[in-house]
Image 1 (cartoon, rainbow, N blue to C red):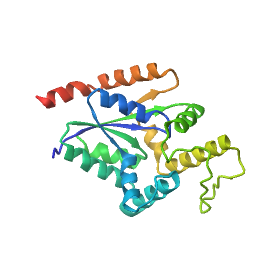
Image 2: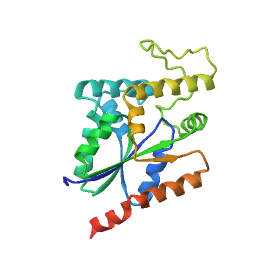
Image 3: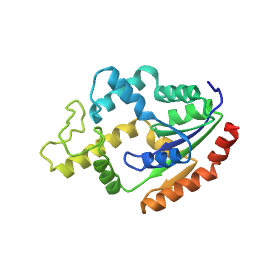
Amino acid sequence: MVEKVKIIGFVGLPGSGKGAASQIAQRQGLTVLVMGDIIREEAAKAGLENTDLNLGRIGTALRAKDGPAAVAKRILEKARNLGEEVVVVDGLRSKDEADFFRAHAEEFHLIEVCAPADARLKWLASRGRPDDPKGRDETDTTDPKVISSCLEPDRRAAAALEARECRELSWGMSEAMKMADLKLRNDGSLEDFQRNVKKLLDVLDARSVLEKGSK
């Protein structure tokens, strides 16, 4: 276990390209931890499917039980156990999580990934994860923002995305995005985005730190 770890965190609305940025980081030799995986692990323990509704409820319950930085605490423990000097964290959702990493990591850099809403909806629909909005009727009647099953599939998917965004913003994501150190715009070609991510990693000198740590 290493006590000192440098963390590069990605924050952004659903479908903005955080996962794509993390894949590029992996190809650069960096270890990536996904905050949503903590919630998916909790769902597996409870025997629940990885639907957006289930994961949203688990995420809210976990933060209510163990505090707003509950997921961040688990991620930092994983990062330290890996023994890596640099870890990329995909999917911060609140200022509390960012504050926790800034207070406990040796270094912390927060990167906002942003993309237009229509592009985000299309990417979410195409990536095939069970918790992504696909226009199916998964209505939470306990939520005041009910997604009507009378809507067309595309409109239901858009409404589902909006509900998911509202939930994540309620956790404090907008404050986290405001405090980001750098911003990555994902509104051009995939090649442009990949090139910008690589440039960003170079700016943060992530690869040189890894090389120094491997000696």
